[in-house]
Length: 196
Image (cartoon, rainbow, N blue to C red; front, side, top):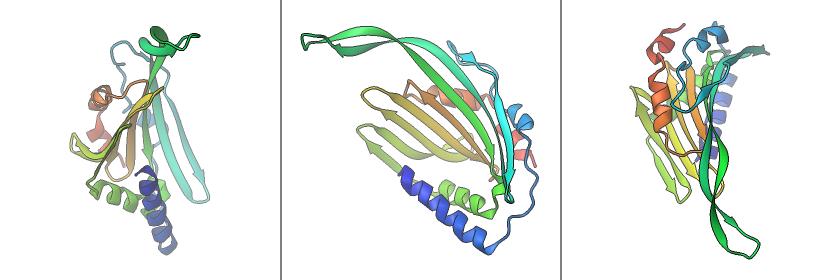
């Protein structure tokens, strides 16, 4: 499904940008986007310093800001011993959450059309490794994913805000998106939507 969505975005961008010249839209500087990022870390996590960049090249531009939260955890994992038996042992692991805001306004009408197509889709896909589905969070449409594999777990929640911002919260080390929803809930998404 991920490859399908990527192909849809590329096709939309290609068709529309061939027929139209991207309008000169002023991007929101990454320092302004950083003000929308979550400040308070989830319980047990530490907030790292936020990062950001505003880039322009060949008439196409984008701006982004991100922040990472990390936590040291202990988990029980099955390990095979020398005699071939499996034993449960406690190991140190690192959990991480990355929250990112990207302003795609400078990438032209193609990206806006791709966003509209994605947010207009209703789907749900589930395998033994996890799920991917369309969702609505606080009035914003997006995609929620969760993946559990033998040696890794991850989850992600992506929202399209105001037709020009992509807000993504991704977790590594865990597959329950509840903590991601809590972080996104702490953000002033209405303020982000009103930025021009």
